[in-house]
Amino acid sequence: MQFPQTVDNNKNNERKDENNNTENEVACQGPSNEIQEVESVESTMHNNELDSDTILREDPALWPLQLKENERMKYLNKGCAFFQNKDSNFESSKRMFKNQYRYYSVQYFQKVMNNGEKCDRKWLMFPESTGCVFCYVCKLFSTDFDNVFVKSGFYNWKKAKQTIFGHENSKEHIQCMIKWIEFIKQNTHVDEYMVTQIKREFNYWSAILNRIVAVIRFLARRGLAFRGHNEVIGSSNNGNYLGMLELLTQFDPVLKQHIDFFANKGKGNVNYLSKTICEELIYIMSQKVLTHIITEIKRAKYWGIIVDSTTDISHVDQLSVIFRYYLIGHVYERFFCFLQIKSHEGKSLITDILDLLERYNIEITNCRGQAYDNASNMSGKYSGLQARLKERSELAFYIPCAGHSLNLVGQCSISECINSINYFCVLLSLYSFFVASTHRWDLLKGNHALNHTLKRLSDTRWS
Ligand SMILES: [Zn+2]
Image (cartoon, rainbow, N blue to C red; front, top):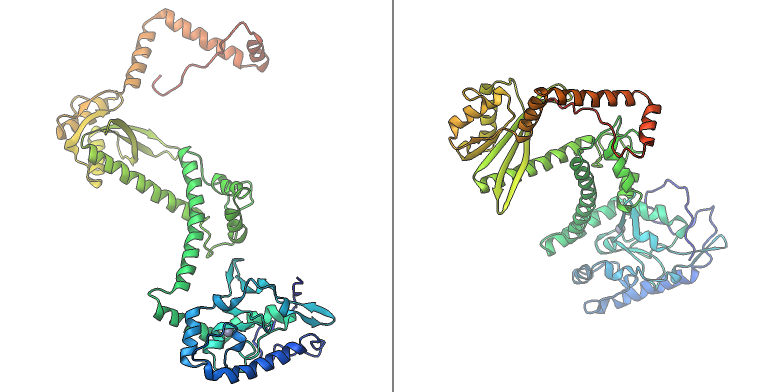
């Protein structure tokens, strides 16, 4: 099948004589028979008007120009898809243009939107008897009987693209479409056509969101940074979030199509790829996780709390809050949140924790355990955090952090023994000696008899 050539013509306004060739075009040599056919069809239409009450004409070319109400209802109830003939081989559309045959193409049944998306032209009909195209809605609702899409059918394939585009954007056609949609609304509970459109939009954006959420979950679980120096798709500095989405486009056609059409379009264009949407999704996911943990704590009823403070990279002192509870055969230890604190004093810390518990409606009286490091502000017997919490919940037993205690014990015992001090000093000197030169380190590695390597003494803040 030969596809029509694209013609540069900006005249999108519908003309009633679209099928008449202009002076630059050679008169249609082929369709003379078809024109006669159309004329004979029209005369047949009027002759058959008498029995139109009973006959449903499957060929739209045979529909009378002025339809009776019962006829219109019959065709409306049948729906446009019944008359479209999308499966035709379009042989009957063959027309001669400048010694070259042109045909109607199935591609005209689809319209390409500005965003590249394709949607069906549900109004276009191709009756094989005439090899022309008609407009379903205009034939049913329009009073403009001279319109070529109503009267004799359109077949000037050389100008098909712009004429069909012009027709669907014409005022008369749009009004007919509105009447059609109104009819469907009145005859069905919900407009099926609109529902299909909404469903398609919904499915599309859901598919995109699923991919975006999967990437966010992956990065969040591994504690990887999201953003880079810019938000430009294609840039090597756009961070892990956009970088991973770009990587997925190599294997995922849905995401590839989305990014090809929507990426780098700037503000005001919805694409769900911006940092704002990313941060919003992270916030929604965090709230969901938090709600889940709160529900579990309330179901478990009794819980323990583990708290420690540390300074983050932006020099803000933050209290990490962890809840520990037992639920249906399992012990859970879940990170809850970071609390920004004003002071390290037990009095200030207890206020912050009580505020947090009150905010999430968690009963302090159900606290059965608390664990902190051995610092006096936390473990202090009289004014430490543990003592102040115990005042509110008598059964909240304090257990010092085992790791911290072990570290203190080790540190204390080593510092009391001169041999162990010498031993660790020699180890550290050896490490310093070898690490100062790559050549020495190579010699150390080259000694296969030595199965171990040297390491620096641990420099955690406790040591
Ligand atoms: Zn129309």
